[in-house]
Length: 100
Image 1 (cartoon, helix red, strand yellow):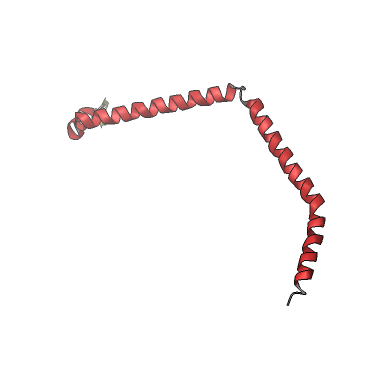
Image 2 (spheres, one colour):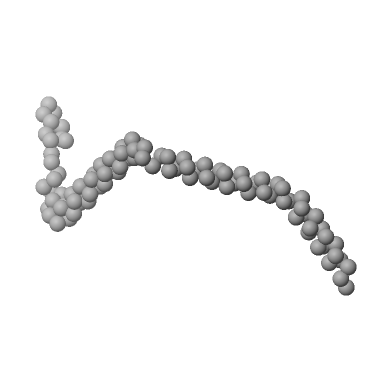
């Protein structure tokens, strides 16, 4: 924009830029911006449908519950067996001390 006193003149640089960079480069940049806009729209649509989709929710809940049950089972088994395993290990290492 140029200000010449009371009048404001709007200057468009598009023709100058088109001559400088060439038509092919301008088309490439235009296509890249179109691809970017379409990708953003697709991602926004995907997020909208993902947020409203409840089909897979029960599967996720079941998987989390199964993992929790497995962890709880391992903790309980380890709690019961740790004392017995410690006694067994002490017997093994005690007898190994007698080997010469």
